[in-house]
Length: 592
Image (tube, rainbow, N blue to C red):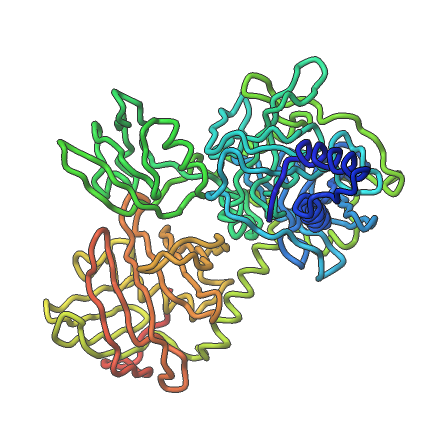
């Protein structure tokens, strides 16, 4: 598409109009560019959402990202609304919407508009390809001007990329932002920033204002869409999602980013990062300042894995690091509550705290509705309050979906604890695994080991250097046997990178005997693709990955197991025989 600035186009059209007297026709390229721009804006406007609280005031904007009504907006837009809000589209219709998940640090919230399965959606762009000088436009509802829900459009340039904005006295921390001179005013919060072709590249959230009049001064910030879309699967869990940290503090010294301090409980420490090391690259980006590291860390949720390169004494080391959360759960919940107690607002520049969003203009269709006291029937059906969640209903639905797909597809009924599994080891030789409810034994070319699952099971980490393979297999059996309700505490985490290629996959987290176990599922098939068992918070997990699924005794089971621990592969097993039945020494007691 030829993307001309509106002023240039207007000037060209004036010249063309003047030339008509001389029988000169307008430049077709200018007319074509104008038509293409209008088409892009019309398409983008259809997916732009006007967000209001239950009383028809305050609010902001949002953008639809899927036909079933999921839409992205700002956390500071939804926090005053409670569980329910009203959303208008440019078709003139008003829809009930429910909160789904929140990212209070990144100022992002996921909501779902209700009543249709064919909502218009935005085309998702690639914010990593955005350049300074690209044309862009913002869509939204500044000052609540659009009482017919048709969004206002402001056109401008991308004036900066990878901008970092300090929290400014609030929980919100803007990282890796797109800076634009397209006007972003109170009411634009949560609305979309599109490129010239109408592709979504960011979520508008923060602007710099003339302090007396709350008027945009030409510097606005949008959260990059790549960051947002990385968080969306986590937000669909209904949780309060946290951002990632390396577990280390750094400073810029003579052009290098040097580690000042590091938590010995962090995965980065276990992967070899130490005090005094220089961080060279993180997540594919060159790191030259402490802010640059903060910037890229902010685009990842807690638990994500990313590549890290650091230098020590002139030698470079590369590894994969599992990122920690910025906050612990209790701290994050407390911070969210304090944030929600503040007046709703549009965060201004880094020197000012959030202020009032603008006029509380009642929308005629909303008069008489209560803000938080009474939820609409459609929202009541999709909302469940629980500590640590924005909306537990969505988490419960995801749990049931993954469990049902897994059990039905794999035909796991009566699989039990008594297994005899044998086959070949990838590096040579054969293996045999014999399990029961209370004990398991594994014979490998390197030796024989066993584990007993009574008492303190967290100490049963055989075979050595596996991180607890036999205990991990027992957790798998327990999960199959007891299901969601009796395994222990279980919740849906979202999607995290998993497996050798780091593909994001659905993850259920379960706790029993004080240990965390993660179960990963393939999105396309519903197969259980792996298990990670953490025997302690500061220990590397046993990572058991599955592939090559086959029909074994009428069940769909994995025929190849990859066992990893820390930085290395413990074993890769090719299954040749898998028998289910009585253990070798007769019946065993049931599992605890």
